[in-house]
Length: 474
Length: 159
Ligand SMILES: Cc1cc2nc3c(=O)[nH]c(=O)nc-3n(C[C@H](O)[C@H](O)[C@H](O)COP(=O)(O)OP(=O)(O)OC[C@H]3O[C@@H](n4cnc5c(N)ncnc54)[C@H](O)[C@@H]3O)c2cc1C
Image (tube, rainbow over all chains, first blue to last red; front, side, top):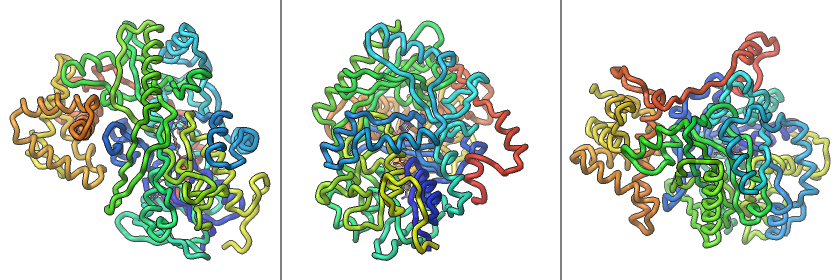
């Protein structure tokens, strides 16, 4: 019997697989998506969006105001994300601590985990000489309007922008393994240490049997069941909530399951220029807002761009007017505004297993979005855009909550040792435990929480550095 | 046009083409949706949709397939109002918009065209060319005596 069965191979699952196997535990990792490597990633945006994402590309909120995107492949969303790695600031941790009463939610105690990741992760800013015109215009507009910005730190190694690499390609998987996804950084090491791996294995539900856990699912149409001493749920906000809701014997003990869903609702605005911008060339993202006043207002701005399919989906209208806008593709800049939303969302699962994600916006969320739109419009004009195009299709890339962490089993799903309340054989440390939206990029903190949680899983105190094998394993 | 889809009937393909032409009628340089023949790749756009979404899409496309073209255009015009509308009608229109626009946009800007189409693809008209330099990593992996690295190592031994 394996010590651990880990469900999901994304930011959290992949990291935990690395940590647990390094600690000597035997693991099996189950992933619903397919395994691709740098040579076999789908060749273009079209093939990539259907093959690498849940829902055949996109999932939709209950009221269809928001499209949700999450990776479904070995390495999970870490394969398709932008790899921006931010530490949470005091504001984010303090909000979490005040809400949950969990003491270690503070920059001081989390620093140890971030520092460890810093040492083990290739990352850094994009050198100034490689900024594309989209980034340069973003910086110019910020300087003119008096907002503060900062270079984005990206978990990537040797992208070869000097050889003309265009990072937009890597939203469908990085063909040179420069992006430090779990597929590159964690899973190979865990495999070297003997971890078993099953892909195209979608877990349906789990059972807690006191001295072992059982995981039931389907692999390429065949029913499968896996037994292990303990289980790690790392399927993300939607994945974990779905699994637990379908695990009826556990769900009945978890009244808060499916609550606290938030997603940093976001919109894109485009600026059109007379000269080519070629925002799709070179590093996709180099800079972001770093402005206290915007942070306090719950507005997050990033300098990003999207491929032609995503851009065409976001641009309003149809017919000749849509063609007119798309013909400007090479002349467009874009700024994305996201908000630190209130955790009012709910994730439900129908009898047939379909996820229904309700994402209502509070008055304060709407005010933040309005502010985001005002600021981005001001910025586009300041940089000299001839036309500013607003998009009314919202989307969510940071899916959080559903299994919130907390001390009270009535209002949370996971305790401060990352165990499911009443079911200590199951651990969760991924985006589903977020009790509140941090208003910052989540993945680096998911990694930090996963490192901390791994120590609990191995029966160590969180501050203990050397991790040893579980007694009696194998 | 030869019917190549294994998932959609010819009526449904007709419906998809009408929606595609309403969204992408062409502008002289950009070809129309039907002219570029991207609909030949329809199966790749929909084969991984969840079963119930695919069933709803097929019903919708079947209905549009037997409607006159101007009705499809009116439907698309209406759907584009969805994001600004409240209430159940807004919800319905937004679902309609995401479903229809999603499929035809993916196909039209896929860079993939019909086997008979000879003109520039919509991506070429936009001037969209992207690449990632890999010569050095290909060479490194070919020379490596320690076996593959990175994502290739992670997938090693998997079927
Ligand atoms: C396009 C995009 C760009 C982003 N950019 C950034 C960024 O720059 N910086 C940042 O910090 N964040 C970014 N994010 C968000 C970030 O990637 C996610 O918050 C993070 O990946 C969540 O980690 P996770 O481990 O919770 O889930 P994931 O990384 O999504 O991993 C979950 C895994 O579980 C698998 N799974 C789910 N259900 C099951 C099941 N039933 N059975 C088996 N397997 C299952 C999934 O297929 C997936 O592989 C981005 C997201 C997107 C979509």
